Length: 235
Image (cartoon, rainbow, N blue to C red; front, side, top):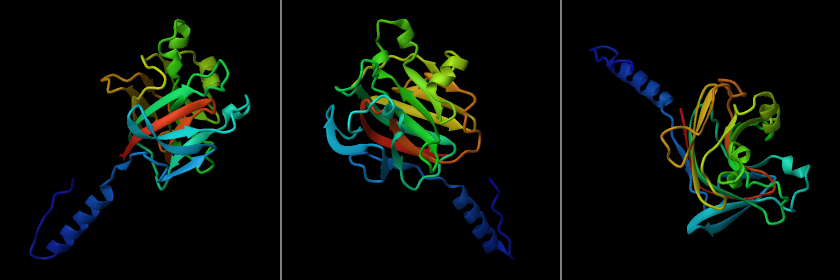
């Protein structure tokens, strides 16, 4: 920080300039309780205010029940008026398969960041809650996932770099899960339920070190998603 210097001449101007620099450097957190869809743009989804697990929450679904091709659409609840490059994102999420979903549904739910205006380009950490306690170890290894749409979908990353962009964490469907995402340039970390160590580390975020965009709750079309207490602290 620049030191403040007062002199007999120009002292007030120095203080004004210093205050301006401090103002420019100040970044404010943005918080949404998600008791409703206020402050969000719903893209390919519907939002409803509900009580879930005893807490006020936003319920996100896609109707009609999706066909296979439709499940790959971008279902987003996008925060309005936000430019995010680096910082911390915190939110509580719950995901479970829609009763009409196919057997491959996992309750996919997560957070997209650096969402572009086309609503199809973004980075994303997401969960597969039904994998968390599966009796198949390979499924457990696919519980948390990073992807970057549209160029780096999960299946491409898994094929080209097995295990690098996904890992295991103990979670269950239809229960509140706390996510904290730390983004710093081309590096990002995902922390689950207040753990000290990240459950997934990405050292080559595909959008690059300086990309900017919004933040959104993300879910796949076969999922019933719930969200509450979103806090975004840009840096």
